[in-house]
Each structure stands twice: as C-alpha cells, then as structure tokens.
Image (cartoon, rainbow, N blue to C red; front, side, top):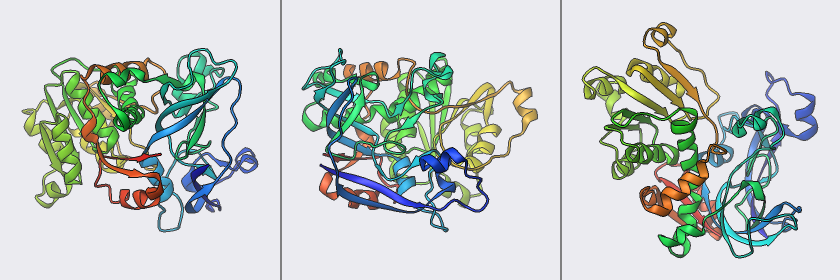
Length: 388
C-alpha cells in the first residue's frame, strides 16, 4: 500500500541527556532535542496486520495537523519542531476517518463497512493514570502518526477501544464530506477536553478569548459560541484564519501584528472590550506561551482561568501574586480521550448544532500530499484534508 513516511536522523543535541530506554527504543521523549533533518516520502509499505482486538480501516480522509507540520519543518539547526515524543520512521497522520475493512475475532462492537473515527491518543488502560480515568496522561501512551504508524496511508490498524462509530453523521453529511467532517473530531476533541473536561467548563454569559485560531483554536471558538459565551475574542497573526473565526462565532478578531504596529497589546484590547473586567476564560491554542501567557494574565477576570492547549518547548513568565489575589487558575490539557469527548462531539455534529465545515479550507488527493504539506507551512488555511 502507499503511505507517507516521515524519517530523520537520530542526532541528540549536546545538552540533551538521552536515556538508555530512549536509545534502545529509538523513541525520543522530546523529539525536538533528538531528531534532525526530517524527510517525508510516499513509499510502498506492507498493509498492516491486525490483532484480535483491532480493526483494519480503509482510510478515507486524514487531516494535516500542526503536530505533523512540526515534524515536517525544522529549526535553524535542522531539528524537528515537535516537542513531544517521537519515534521514526513512522507513517504520519492522526486525524482520520475511514471504513472498517476487516475485524479481529475479539471485536464485538464494529462490523465491516461501518464508518469510524479513531482517537489518536493510544492509551494502555492498565497504568494508574488510565485506571484513574486520565487516559490522556497514560504512562505508556503512543501517539498515532508520531510514535506509531498513522493514517496518511491506504490502510491503518486501530484498537477497538479507540474507535468510534460515525454512521450517524450520514444523517447530515454525504459522501466525502462525512469523512472530512469526521476527521475534525480529533482536533475538536482537543478543544472540548481543554475547555469542558480539564478546564471544567464555564457559565453561559462568560467572555472567552482564544489566542491562535488554527484548527484547535477555531474549534474552541465554535464550542464557546455553542456553550453560550456572551463575547468571543480571537487573536492571531493570519487574517484568513481570523476571517474563519468570525464565521464560527467570534465577535471580535485582531491581528496581533497590526496591534503591535499601533502599540496596542492583546490584553489592552480585552480589557477595553470587557470594560475593565477581563475575560473569564482564556484559551491558549497558539503554542506561543512566551507572548500569550503574559497577555492572558493581564486581562483574566477574577476567578478566571487560563487553558493551555498549545504545545511548544518554551517558557513563560508568570506574576504569581496576581494568580493568588485574583484566584485565577492555569490548566494544561492534552488530547481528547475519555470524558465522553468523542461521544458528545459526534452527537453535536450529527445534530447540526456544531457547524465546523468552515474550518476545512483545502482538500487534496493523496497523490498531492507532499504539495499539501508544503502549502500548509504558510499557515493560511484552517484545516487541510487529504482524501485517500
């Protein structure tokens, strides 16, 4: 079968102490500290075998994620940008849908021909974190398309426990659109987890600010609008994405570069729009903590929360006294597993209450996948989908 395979050179940075386990498994805990000179190539590989508890899925749609781009791109020294665990070579791609082609003999809840979406956080189910319900913090976690083979391929194998039936989406979507929208469940789930599971939700009437309106930030805008936010403010440096944010429910959008040119900060805009009260919910989906965290702290409301979804190997300065006096909280969130997340997102999509179609702004056939990756590095699109 055809598959897009990412590879690179194992060249740990001089200041990074590689553990014996990392070296033995060729699996870096911090990919950006180890993997250098990444390559992406469409290759002929063997069709995956399935275990008794797995499904073989014929992939129909797979989105290009920011994490994929962080493996595709490199810094000035040639290292990948992704700061999470990485094992190469690896078939890339983790936001996907498809049709069940074959099932293992212990699979009970799926049938051949069924349409499915699949979690990309492969939790083990037996570690203390999993047994406590913290699946996204699994101590043996595998990340599809990053530490284990993913779905930018004709076929992929997936555990039954990670698969979700999306046949119900056929009530609202036809043909390829069903699979494209279904592939958005993964990034929508990340925003849902941060805002409503890890973050505990918010009261209708709250003000929500989203920093960074890539696909996860755009999902946060759409979910905030659906959940009853009284005002949604979005910041980014790309006008085309801010336009999508407006379509999805953002009341105010600002290009941070334009603000800077006029000596205005994001925090000042939020305080002006909220008449000095600040925002109850601040979502960081930009992966630019060195800038955003300071801004968010300056304009968070009393008892407000900062939800950190962006991922980057960076540090940020906090004013701890303000954190105490305003009773604010900072919440980190990863992934989309558990908490009923996929279940509820699927129901919202099937009902039509959650309209995320505008997030998809580009579609490519698999034969043009390398061109799609190259184009995606300009960050102009919302979500780019690959039809397979």
